[in-house]
Image 1: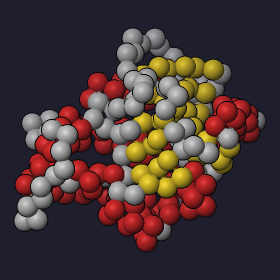
Image 2 (image 1 turned 120 degrees about the horizontal axis):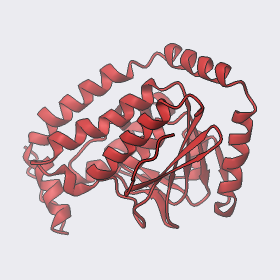
Image 3 (image 1 turned 90 degrees about the vertical axis):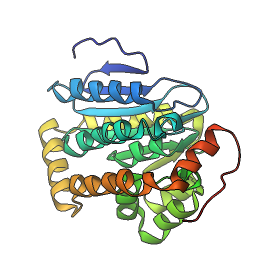
Image 4 (image 1 turned 30 degrees about the vertical axis):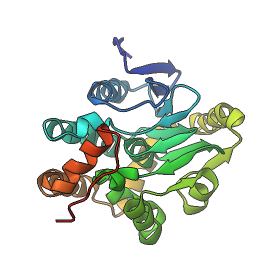
Amino acid sequence: MASHNFQAIQVERQGPVCSIVLNKPALNIIDFAMIQEILAALELAENDNAVRVIVFRGAGAKGFSAGVSVQDHTPDRIGEVIPAFGDIFRRLSRTEKVTVAAVHGFCFGGGLELVLMCDLVVAGENAQFGQPEIKLGQIAPVGLIVLPHLIGYRKAAELLLTGSTIGAREAQSLGLVNRVVPPEELSQCLEGLLAELNAQSGTILRLTKRALHRLSGLEFEKQLQESEEFFLHQLAETEDAKEGILAFLEKRAPRWAHL
């Protein structure tokens, strides 16, 4: 892979595996700069035929990611950030490389959406998953599409409508996570999974993933476009959506207008 001067992420290459590490601890907030770097890293990986697996991890001890920057949800910035963030998922939906997420600690909002788009997920027992956007008067454009597909409508509705969180074991029972191990064994678990993947034919892995996506019945890119348009042109224009962001930035409880 060609070199790139990344600041918000770390990109590590080991054999056929390209690891993208969200590198803004402790919260690993995904701001616009990180979005641009993730897109650049994915392009590098996509154009490298020797890369067969892409891994996402979060730096630091506290967690994978607390989500997309709230500062980037203000009315003057959201119109640029949401489509750019969506481009990450459009690229992930198109890639025929296997994608893996290794999750420790908190995994919220846009961080969870990134995990939702991965083919395989391993997690430490301390992992917590949630879509808290509703508490800020927002929605999760990708979560709205993928969560019901992965875990069923009822539980997806609970997470999206209440902003509640679930632990790693419950996430595993719902089908959101493949393997759960003690936090200190997460790296070993990831390495074991990667060894299993690397033992397979790269050609057959790629073709199997292509078939999985074609037969899944999920028209992701079309639905993402609809979700983003709804977010930007309906929800984001409401007074309560603006109030939710403002209240967070002012560190106070929101005063909903309910209009």
